[in-house]
Length: 85
Image (tube, rainbow, N blue to C red; front, side):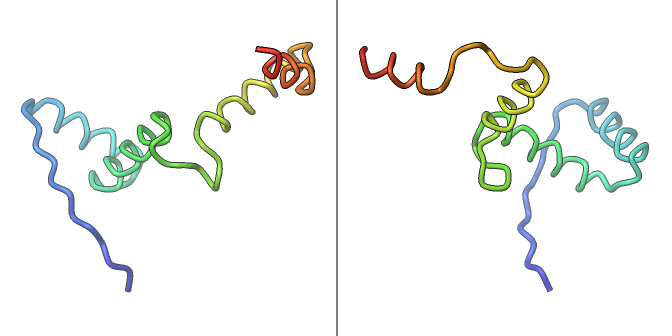
């Protein structure tokens, strides 16, 4: 059996609690699962944790590179420029 860690979450606004419950219900998950996923997504975005061995920044950069295509400068040129500085 997997050991679970407990984290307390105190909200000052009762409306936020209601909105979380509604959002979780719409997705068919518990409020705990919903909050855990939201926290994980924030940690990825803030680069506090990696995603399958990559930082969240690299994941986003790869996605952007796929969307816009090559930027016109090769990696070798960028490395050479960095060495000159």
